[in-house]
Image 1 (cartoon, one colour):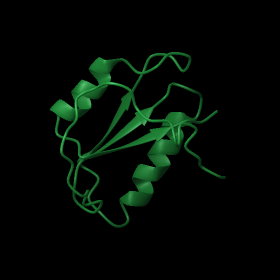
Image 2 (cartoon, helix red, strand yellow; image 1 turned 90 degrees about the horizontal axis):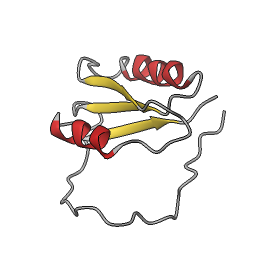
Image 3 (cartoon, one colour; image 1 turned 135 degrees about the horizontal axis):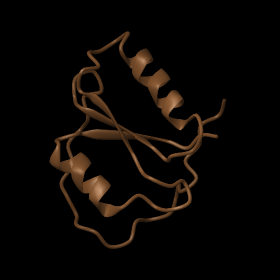
Image 4 (cartoon, one colour; image 1 turned 45 degrees about the vertical axis):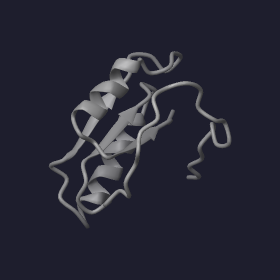
Length: 94
């Protein structure tokens, strides 16, 4: 399976600028965000399981949007930030 970022090279528009710090992938909280397509949650669950071999997974949580055909609502991103997640992995799977 080849995993690609379909929006690579497209700059984000608007939004608040925030200072970022390096992510500690072995300790920091990670948000797993599904796009609501079939098998996306299963893909992310597999990634979470694999991460469990090298780090605790109690601070890795699932989030999702309601429809694959619509962008994620700003409230979803606000929730991820408000809960202190330092990184997010997004699944685009069929």
